[in-house]
Image (cartoon, rainbow, N blue to C red; front, side):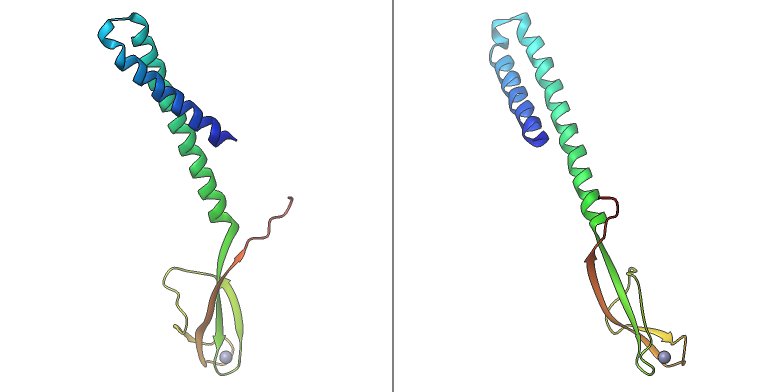
Amino acid sequence: MALMFSLAILAYSAWLIYGAASSYDEGKAESLYNLALGVMGVLLAVSSLTTMRRRIQAVRAQSIRTLTVELCEKCGFKSVREFKVGDYVHKRLGPCRQCNGDLLIDMIYSEPLRREGF
Ligand SMILES: [Zn+2]
C-alpha cells in the first residue's frame, strides 16, 4: 500500500519534471514551480522507498537465526549455540568439555525465530 503510494508520487513527480522541462522554452513561471515540486516529490518517494527497504531487510534478518551443533565423537556430548563466522561442518573445535575427546561441528542449520507477544 505504502509502496504503491511512493511509486505514484514518483510517477507524478517524473511527469511534473517532464512537463516543466518541455514548457521551459515558453518561459512560464509556473514551469519552474512544477520543476521544484517534481524534484521534491522524487526525493520524498526515494527516501520513503529506501526507508521501507531497510525496514524489510531488518525484519528478514531478525526472523531467522543460524545455529551450530557441536558434537563429541567419543562420548556423544552435544551442544547447540549461535552460529559464528568461520564455522563449518566437521570443523575440529578442540577437546571435549566432558571427556577430552575430539569436539567437532556436527551440523549447521537455520530456524525461524519464535516471536513472543505477537
Ligand atoms: Zn566427549
